[in-house]
Image 1: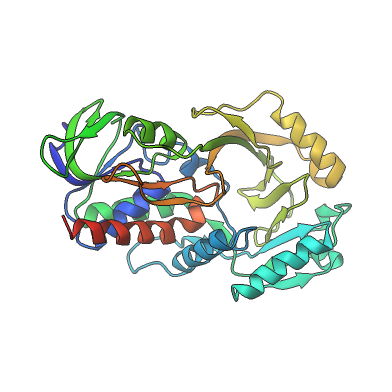
Image 2 (image 1 turned 30 degrees about the vertical axis):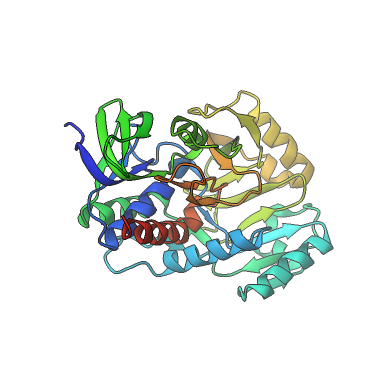
Length: 362
């Protein structure tokens, strides 16, 4: 099927950022929203491969605010958004060996009025006996955190957008963007044809910088960081309701119950060019070495499956959401930095409000 020749808004990227923006634009009554996804399915990259951790308390005030707003959506989505719950509220334990770091996290939670509780090490071990030996001063417990059904979330946004009139096209790589022949328009040239639009939303994930350059914008120096995740084999007597644990020291790691075992990550962050990442042959060994130093009881678990994903960061670590300073028809929704699953409802709503306001003046 060919692409429509015209669209009011073209969104490049069908992951969390693009799908949420499309959903809120369509809900606001913006007609002719077109989502262009370069892959054969939406969420092929970061949106479909992350650990699904809803973490509201971060090291940054802006990101924490966005994550809290997004988590509120996950806890209570609009009626009919998803047949399945979006969030399994297990809570989280943000552990650390540095008491000052825990003080800072607690102070941020207080400032944002985020329900939380500080736990002593023995209270952490009561919930997670396998963490015996982990060097920690304690943890911050956030009871409203949990595990996101990332596929239900993405499909809910896409289905809601389609139901309100948006169109999603797959296998449509954007090759070039240039001003249209008509005033206040842009020509989006793709591998499946050309579309004329009034606005382009750059929600291309790891490829956002390249799309910005193709549009003639001064793209922020985004960094794409590759991370590995590992699923263990079956764990007897697995506590599926246990909170996930994120250890925030320099030797960072996180663990949560998943399927019949544990999902483990050593929080590796190798800078790579935008790509379809593959598992590095030494990644599992690196995970094992870290776990043996931190929590040997986890290090002994055999690995059943592993995969890699990309997270994309702007220089300040905050999402880039707003109009480009040089290209008037280009809007950025990029650099979600690993917080896309939690923060995308808030980011998509914010982006759609700005875009709708400008479109009303055209």
